[in-house]
Length: 190
Image (tube, rainbow, N blue to C red; front, side):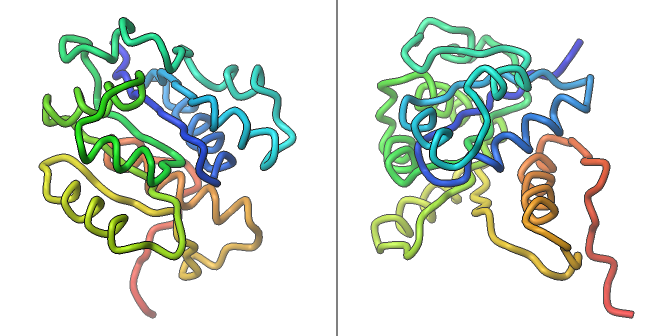
C-alpha cells in the first residue's frame, strides 16, 4: 500500500519547487501525493511558470480543493506519512502556529501536528521579521515539525537553477524517506 503524503502549496514564491517535489514523489511508486493548492498558489503559478494548472495536477496522484474541509486529510484517521507545504507563506505559518484551521491546508497541517506526523514547511520570505522568526521557532519545537527554507546550496556544484531546485526538493522530501535519484549528498572535503 502506498504511503500518502499531503502536499500543500500557498501563494508564496517557489511554485517551481512544488512542481519538482511532485515529480520526485511521482518517481517513487511507494508514495502517493495528495495536492492542495490555495487560490493564491494558483495565481503565483501563472507568474512563476509556464505550466498550466492541469499540468501541475497531472503530477499529483490526487487533487483536493482547499475549501473541502471534509476531505480525508482533515481527519487524523486518514493515514499519511505526513505533510509538506511548499512554498509555505508566512500567513500559513501564522495560521499553523495559532491553530487557525480555516481551510484544508491549515486543517491538514493541524491534524499532522496533533497526530505527531512529519510536517515539513518550506518557509518563504525575506527578510524575516521578529514575528516570522518567533512563529517558526515555536513551530520547530513541536515534535515532527521541520522548517526547511528553500536556500541555495553550492557544495554540490549546481550547473543551473534546475539543479538547485532539484537539490532543495530532494531535501524537502528526505524526511519522508524519499531518496531522489539525482540528489548529491555532501561527502566531505577531499
